[in-house]
Image (cartoon, rainbow, N blue to C red; front, top):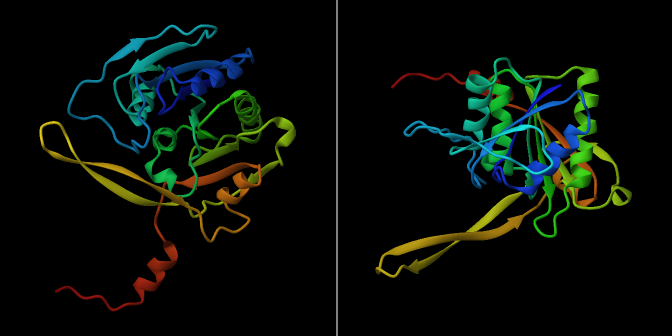
Length: 256
C-alpha cells in the first residue's frame, strides 16, 4: 500500500516517527513522509499562497521512508505531496499521530484533521489520528492500531469521500475498553485573553482558556475517549444542513 504520512506537530515529532516505524514493519507498505518543518498545531485548513514552499529532505534514525520537510502548513504538505511530488496518487493519507485529542469542534481548528481532509479533497482516502494525551507520551499502542486499521480498511474498500477521525486513549492495550464508532461530541473552549505590555510599551494579548465537555451522550467521541475506548468518527466535507434547506424552501423569500 502506498501511504502518504503527514502531521501538524512537525516532522521531528515523536508521533509521526512512531507511526512510520509501525507502518514499515509490513513489507507491502510504501511510505512517503511530507510534513511541516515545525509545529503547525491549530492551523486548520490554511494553505500558503503568498510565498514559495521549500522542501528539504530529512534523515531519520531507523526509518527508511523518504522524508520531506516543508516550510508550510499541514494542508500544504498533502497538496504538495499528491499534486507535485508523487507521480501517482497514494492509496491513503494518514495524518498524525497527533499529540493531544481532536474531538468535537477540534476538527474545525486542527491541522491534523485538515491535512487528512486535503486528501479527501484530492480524491484520496484519509484518516486523522490523535493520541488523547499531552504528557509522558507513548505512541506505540496507537501506531500499532493504525497499522492494523488500514489493513482492515483496505480489505473492505477504502472510501475517498469520508474522513475517519481516530482518537486513541492514552493507556496500555490491556486497559483499552474496545473500539467505538462515534459521532462528534460537544467539546468547546471558554477562552480568556490576558492583556499584557511588551518591552516597547505595546499592548498584546495571550489567549488561554478551559475546555468544556457538556451534554455528550454515549455515542460521542468525547464519551468514548473518557471510557478508554478508541473512537472512530466518519466525517464528510459537505457541511450543508439538508433538513434546514427543506424548511427554508417553504418560506416565501423575496428580493429587496
